[in-house]
Image 1 (cartoon, one colour):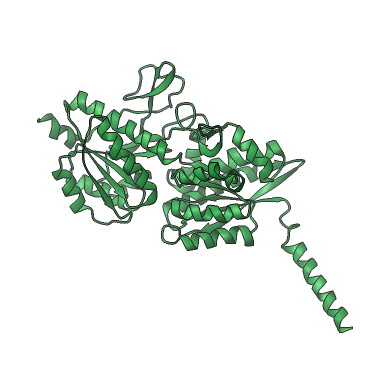
Image 2 (tube, rainbow, N blue to C red):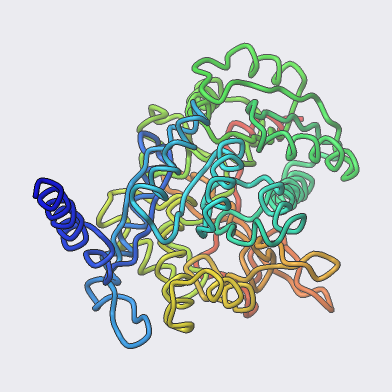
Length: 449
């Protein structure tokens, strides 16, 4: 009798769990895990972008999966990946094994994302990153497709393309210096943070910049969280640099912006300076961060297409700041996953993967599509260039953050990047582009000569 009693209670507990917290409870939900360093701007943008997309989709009725509509439920995971890869892996495992998410989005630090990628692949869960740029994440898809086919890079495009953008920034600045300041021989310095993602860009820049006729004055590597760059900037100034190419994601970017303005360094600062892509930039640099330029995705008054402005406006209205590139979790949920799920009528990765691989998606930062390698193998990496996604170069001008690159010109049979806006913009041009300007102290320094 006692044995029957125990079996009865065990069955009751099992049925209770099934009814209250098991698959039946989540049958009408699409569970998406958002993973990132939630105490930092990157993780906050991961979460904010996803939250905005989920709320918009759910308010409109949800995602149509076959003959029913399903709401999106988000699960937040703080990866703490800036400091700990182990914590990042633990957070990914909790999302997949405890929260039973259908998809995971986020990530920022390549080293951590490689480890998180393996956890997702072990469990055959689609992992879509919006942050890391190192090619290795997508190279793995080529090397072992059956294992890594569940991984996709959503934002940004990889560091090989980032360096092409940066080279184009430098080319445009060099041409304007030649024309407007009369500088013929230009010296350039590279200031990069000590991180895996930056290594590739630094090494490529060291090779390619001299081939453009520029004189490489030196390379400086700093901690991503450096709070004082006086020694480095003084050395850069002693080396007579006219252009400083930055490769900085971390808080050291704020230090650079502030000290650049304080010291009135006679050089143009361009490159990757992620921290300046915020409406709070002038405040956090104590009013000294004017004229710096960075690669980014969004400013207020520039549009890739008709989807850009509604996204940027809604993001600013709700969260009080510009969306960073990690906020493209919005793009991934609203325009990629939703479309793929509704087209296939399924949450099964085996059905979704071929659809995402073979289709183009109009998204707020352009046209999203995935490239193949020279042998026709899937890489699950973004196509880059005119007509797809390019990102922008944006500069602070008199307290306003404006897009100053790219400008396009037609060089048959392809589009190329131009130095300044065309008087009659072509069909691939972006609305709201502005000319690049030099800081007044730079003009004064070199006009004298």
